[in-house]
Length: 120
Image (tube, one colour):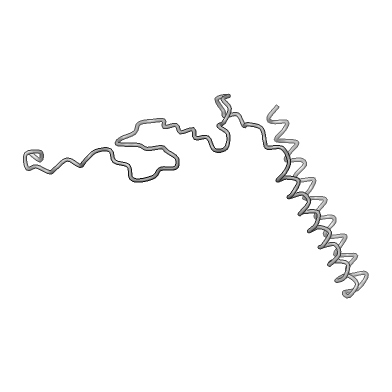
């Protein structure tokens, strides 16, 4: 099902690109046909309308319902915004810290003093 969704999204994207290119070519031809002065005035109106439409879509996207939790490849739900989910895999050589909102320093222990006996 994911392949079908990916294919339809790709088809939709390329369809949008094709429509945009056709509209651009048609506007270019129209602007040449009506003359520079009239084309300039019309382009100003079209630009204002497209800007207002974009603003409306941005506001709609900001106030619409929040997205649903996304599942990870293992099938578990991803943590919600603000939650912390740290995971270390593989071999770790030395200390490892995974944290959020740390205040102050982190100390794992005092360094060992160097002694001549340790180098033999």
